[in-house]
Length: 372
Image 1: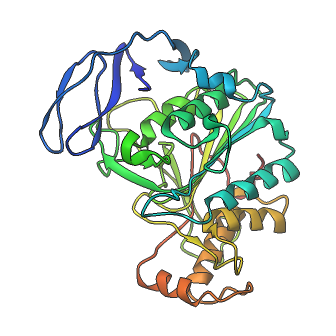
Image 2: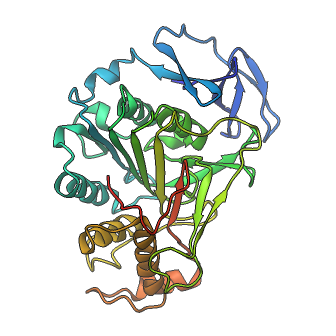
């Protein structure tokens, strides 16, 4: 299944090179293309009819764009029927049969489910969980199921809705051929079958769950993965003050990251916010350092701890608290139970992780309360 992005009358899709595996954008109508990485000539199979696609036109102050929405894929019928005003997609991937397994991803999902249901009053039947432990084949975090889950998340979104997309797993990056990225690379999420089916790139995530958000609706993405700093392609990135005592975030500033291709990356009037484990160039960690014996993602654990410790926490204090907890662990000063010597050694030698905040629009992080 290919998710097509339609922009200014031009259609394109992501295809994978059969030789080197690189994902890249190609014109929708093409049947043959030359790989930009290995220069191989790739012949594509004949496309199926697009009987399951529906184009939804949206207008955002002076900018017209179209989002392709899947409406007839069989898997969507397996999604929860009660969407609700608050709904969430929680993905946890352990890659248990691979050579790079993660131990804490399912724990992360369970912790986020608790936070959403108990602290932010999300109805349990409006929380869609995708892990390798699920019995329903449509709840396994494959590339196809994650795509369908993202479409379910925003289907029928309207003013007053609060949506959450959560991912705990591997993140990576691929060469950017659409000239969007300043660093020349698209950030990606790795489904459980990414080695055979490919990865989900930030362009697709933005088009699927960011652009449809209407005025008065809210989307939060919380991504505990490597290279996830701009995984939603939101153009306003918050840079905290280097003064670690600045608890409120008053001395930080927003940085605008221009999309060089001119493609619109915003919402349809709503607010989209991303909290990610690290910058695009950094790696994140799956560890027992903060709990003593239960593996968790560093971002997930510290986000939940910050919210538990301060129920009316602002975004500024949240980011500061999370960064400070990891910084203390790096310096060997964390006070929680359990030995963290191996984790500290890893941090000191090669690991770097700084929580990132990005948004579809600027706001005062020292005053705006973190609410899901």
